[in-house]
Image (cartoon, rainbow, N blue to C red):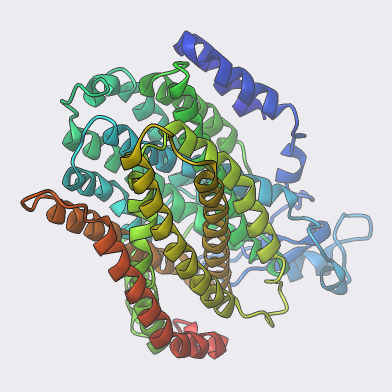
Length: 548
C-alpha cells in the first residue's frame, strides 16, 4: 500500500498529465488493508532452521529442497526446536496441529506478496501489447508487426538462465530477493529513462517514420528483465505457500499477470484516446511505481536465507545437470510435445483478430474498453476454476484444459465469421457498424477469455502438482518456458505468413486463409492429442521426479 502511494505521488512530479491516473491508483490503494503483519514470521525462534517454512498457525513444516544446509554445519531443525521448546514458547509440540489447519490460514501474507510480484510482472507485457494497435494506425506493415512480436521471446527462452537464478544468490539478502529486487529496479529505471524519447520513436499518427526495430530492442529488454523476475517468483511460490495451498500459486500467477497487463494495456489506450497521457508519460508513472514497490519488496522477510554448500559454479553446474535429467524423462518429453504445439492453431485468433477488427473500423479505444469487460470475466473464471484444484490431488487439470481447448476452437470459428461481417459493413460504409455485430463481438470475446483463463489455470495447476521441489524454480520455469515457446513461435509465423500473402500482386487479405487453416489444424491437434493428454494426467508423481 505504501509502495502504491509513493509511486502515485512520484508520478505527480514526473508529468502533470498523469495526475488522474496517479490519483486513481492512490484511491485504489485505500481499499486494501495492510498485509505487513502477515509477512512477518509468526514466531521468533532463537535459531530457525533453513529447512523450516511457515505453516498454518505459525507451525514449522519441513520443505523438500535440495542442498538446504552445509555438510559441515548443521542448524537445529524444526523437530529439534519443538523437542526443546517449553510450554508458552509459541511452538506447538503437537504435530497434528498442522494437519488440522484448513483453508487460507497462515498463507494470506504469502498470497499478497505473490499477487504484487505477478502484477508488476504483467506491466511490461501490457505496455508491449498496446504497441501493435498504435502501429496499425500509423501504417506499419504486417511483416514489421511480426518483427515486433519477437519482444516476448525472452519468456520463451528463460530456461537458459533459470538455473543461474536458482543457484546463485546472496544468502543474507535472500535467495529470491537477490534476483527479484534488481530486476524490478532495473525495469523502473529503464521505464523512466526511455520515457524521455519513446514518443519520438513512435512518431505521429499517419506520419510514418515509426522506428520499429529500436522499439523492438527496448521492449525485448523489458521482457528479459520481467522473465528473470518470473523465474525467481515461481521459485518463491513453491516455498512461501503451505503444502495444502501450493497450487494457489497458479491462481496468483494468472490473476496477478492479468491484472498487471490490464492496467498497462487498457490504462494506456484509454487515457491516450482521451489525450490524458502519452506513451512516455505513462511509462514514467510506472517507472516510479516500480521503484517504490521495490523498496517494499526489500523489506519482506519470507525468503530463504541459508547459505548454499559448495561454490557457486558447482551449484550452477548441478542445476543444469538436474534440468537435463528432467528433460530426459519420458513424461516430460511427452508433455513438451503437447505444450510446444497446442497454441499453434490458436495464434491466428489471438494475434490477427484484434488487428483485423481495428482495420475494419473498430476504434482501438473501443477494443481497450472491451478488455475492461474481459478482466473481471478472466479473473472470476480463474478463481472459479482454481477451486477445483485442491490439495487432495483427485482433480484432473489437463482434462479441464482439453475441454477448454475445444471451446476455444468453437469461439475461433465464430470470430472468423465476425471479422467477415465487419468487413462487409466497412465496405458498405455510411451506416457504420451494426450494434448486433458489437454485441456478437462482446459475447464471443468473453467466451474466448473464459476458455483461455481456464486453459491457463488448469495448465499452471498441473505444473504445480508435478514439479519436483528439489530444483525449486528451475522445474516450474522449464515447464513455463515450453508453454511460452509454444505460444510465441506461432504468433510470429502467422503474422509473417499474412504479411507474405499481402505482399503478393493485388495485395490480397491473408487473414481468412491463415485463420481457416489454423481452425482445421486445431481440430486435428485435438483429435490426435487428447489420448496423450489423458495418459499424462494419469501418470504417478514419481514419473515427474528428477531422482527417478
